[in-house]
Length: 436
Ligand code: FHN
Image (cartoon, rainbow, N blue to C red; front, top):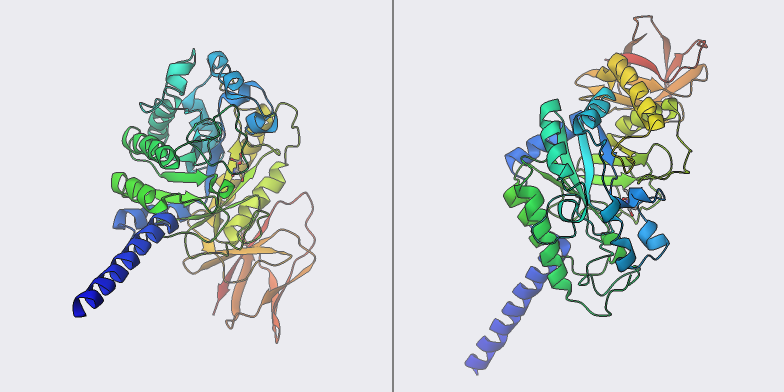
């Protein structure tokens, strides 16, 4: 009898352990503890506040965005003719870094592989890459990584888990076959993805992190997140892992991103909530991520600066996107806006860089940021009087950045500040206050 009971108990124990291991693989790196270097990168990331997103691939040749392969259901055999025409002779990584740094950006996040499956780097695990399939034949990520080092910018890689090209990305979620067989080995695809991630984490120096995207296409699948996240953290202990899955962060993730909306207000939100992790929201300058020839809906510099301010007021970074042309240049309209943001940051950057969300919750008039005991009110919609929520501490002083005093009155409901109408098209009226 006891033997049978021992056997049953041991089987139960074995199944529980196997379940736990399965859950870990699927649900992230359970028990993950960020290294001291990783925590350092997280703090750096939050201080940086502003980065450049770059969506660049062979799809730019068509000028209809990065989803063209799916939207036009282009068969792989057709799509694979694109790389043969990709020859960005005007690609100048130093120029890209100058534009980013000139905009006041502190890091770059570039697509290493988007959903089309084409590697913008020299991969040994596949020849479907920029070195082996294009007349240009150079590893643009290597060139950009070296330029980022020269310009003091960190480099992150956006890597799509979703793949419209690889035959083992099967079963497919909402993707089309694009001529692929109705079969495939899912773990073989994950091994392939991990092998390319190992290349990105081994061949490009110290990276800022990996920005995953595309898990939302098969949310129920076993993505073996634990294994993949451990791989990255073991090769790059300082690197941050983030995933644009629109749900609550999984263990092993070091920052939480939101797309086209401030934290918790993004349209893709599937109950992600706002975690304690460093936050980042990403946005386009026009309406497209990848180069779209007919998308002239460029946001104004004023709106983009205000977006950066609102992001900071929500304790979040802003990752602002450019979609370079197939020749490697960045659209003039995008460059102009980035230069305007840089000019504003050269004057007011102390109220954004190195700050965290301020003590006053975002309100209709604007947001607040704080740096140590310095508190900045960013009044974006001034209407004469603004009311600061009562946070249990009295306002002791209030002045504009030029030193001009601001009249304020403490009331039972909070502190009123009186803003005289200001001439001109003000982007952001910044008031520094002291609290007792
Ligand atoms: O499908 C992608 C899209 O192409 C783009 O990369 C954005 C950027 O955040 N992410 C996905 C859409 O949610």
